[in-house]
Amino acid sequence: MKNKPDDLISILEQKETFYPFMRSGKCRFGVPNTAELNEFMELIKAILFPGYFSRQTIEADTFGNYLKVNLLNMQTILTSIIHKGYCFDCENDEKSCAHTVTESAGMSERFIETLPLIKELLISDIEATFLGDPASKSHGEVILCYPVIQAMIHYRVAHQLYKSGVPIVPRMITEMAHSLTGIDIHPGAEIGKNFTIDHGTGVVIGETCVIGNNVKLYQGVTLGAKSFPLDDNGNPIKGIARHPIVGNNVIIYANATILGRIRIGENAVIGGNTWVTRDVPANEKVLL
Image (tube, rainbow, N blue to C red):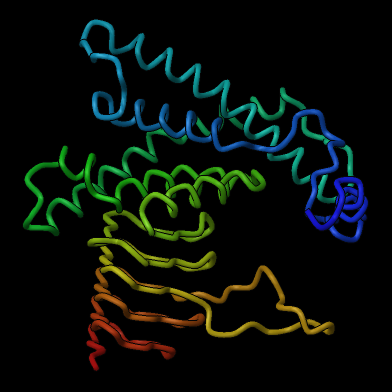
């Protein structure tokens, strides 16, 4: 080894080599971790789709207790995750963590109240996927095998947390799905009911994208940003609407790229491998 251990430590401990890429440890609760997030998502799936993702045998006479136990376990884990998310955010701003465990528990309870809505939307996504693919044999096959459903479970959950203002956690949840499926959906995107993606790999849906009802995408579709206005220092201005608005009943075929805050009108069809940077009227077909 060319450098002695003490020499390496001397180099590595220099503040300019790690700041802000090292956690300072100000908050004893740490940061959200993937083990907790994985456990949380497994409980979500077990609650929303009993028998598909749970290890227990589901019996009619014990189903209520099954749901109660899983809901309580899920709430406990989510409360911890939300609290760590807020502590992470406060530490970024060099503030003391202002959100207590009690406040995080309240947010966790409010999230649980959205589970019926999440389930309703996911069932519509499953139905759209099943009806839209002649190769699918059953709804159960769609739930277990189709990457879009894994991605949408993560997205629908993350989106509710995102709307509640929970820091970092929603993005971590959707990035878990990105790693699993190759489908990249930002939790800030607005997606209507009966949404599906055929195959799925390589799809990108940006933070400020708005998608209506009954929309179908194919693999490789990008709903992205075209360019970024810059501030006085030459850095991109964050938080502005910069992604497409897609109307109801739109189909976008494989590897289409749609960029900027443009509108794709209802019932439009965007052909494969197209490059779209202008508004598309309702009922129009865009082909190469």
